[in-house]
Length: 381
Image (cartoon, rainbow, N blue to C red; front, side, top):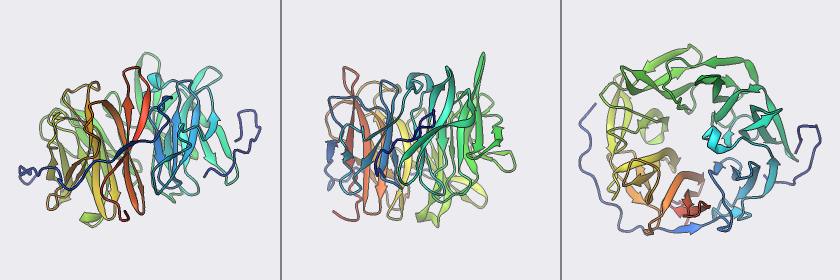
């Protein structure tokens, strides 16, 4: 690890048709396998997974940055505490940034982006594995910038980050830049407040929500032309939006968003040059409200992981689900145990032969414990 004062510490080899109304019941053949994988005596909030390097990163309650290995076969944390290597200290509290450390993929090894205090000023920093050690360094022109979202295209020679630029007395601006080109920094126009955007897989664009007549609608922003294209037009607030290449649809771009007061997820595909709803996910869950959806691809098919709750807020008991996006082969599967608990932040971890969903159990005392759930999708048992 290279510290801010230039010292290097060797930390070891850590590597618009009618919507679907025939909603199927959950598979009766599947039995949840929900296991605690983190040390239950300590809190491990908001872990983020590197599927390329089989790693997990997180920020602890003392605002320290950690990275640990994930066993690609069992999904176990190595070590269970998640404290594999201490990378940095003095991070800005997640309570302020609203987002912990995030991965970015590109040519070479994955990198971690996070927000810390540098000379008492909020700034972006990054950590990366050199092949023999971890290095950490502040991002050039990173002051007054928070909450990164990295592009996730392995091998990309120009990886990018989205972040929020702070303005005194005003709402933060949604901003992007190429990782190694500070002069490429650009503000994204018309983004809703608070800004919420994700990179589009394999494309130099981002999916985001924009304000249209007082409603949040889905849009796509092309970073090379600076143009924003509205994608949804039906009434009601939308978002967040996730867009990716779906193998079951010839690797065409598709997207979903939350809609209908957080109770449904319409899946959109471009048909005859029009973004059209091809399926609407409405899980057969006890709680009708959907939180924290994210797509993942495994064995040639696309799925969405998400939470369901009985109320619109983020408190109270919740369940973790996965669903397929293809109406011709519908799938809804609850992967968490039947025990009532406050669950948050479902995250997928996919290897060539395994697909797991992790989530955070928030105990009554506020300790955050990580669970690993089988999906029943594995190529190998």
